[in-house]
Image 1: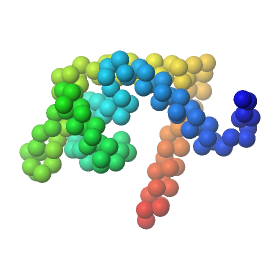
Image 2 (image 1 turned 90 degrees about the horizontal axis):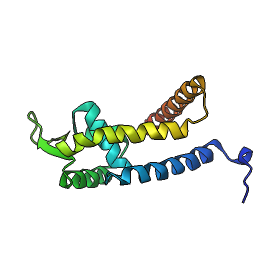
Image 3 (image 1 turned 135 degrees about the horizontal axis):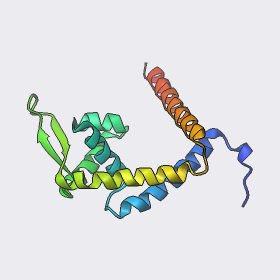
Image 4 (image 1 turned 60 degrees about the horizontal axis):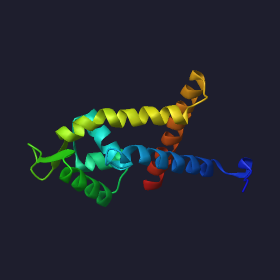
Length: 150
């Protein structure tokens, strides 16, 4: 069935593209027994070294139940460790375990492969412009969320 793309709102086009990206990445991460959220957790902990569960949930825009479930699975799988914060024993600090550290290159490789697929056929200028525009979309949505909460 053919659908005229001029009639699809931007949100619809982005939703369709995001759905396709998620499904493609899901297949790539399956090889490492990870899902997209778990890969994002690994990558974020790699960049930040250690974080509380709350900080990680905020950074990844995940709900408390979702992050808790993911962290428990990842801890059982040997990807991350949880330890009490030295200053506040009520706070659990998350860090990468050895298995999680060994997956980082694979997570980066999936990101690189996805970039090649997504940005295929674009010039360097178009890639840079697309990145800037996507960051602007993200910023606009964050601004709207802050305004709605106020």
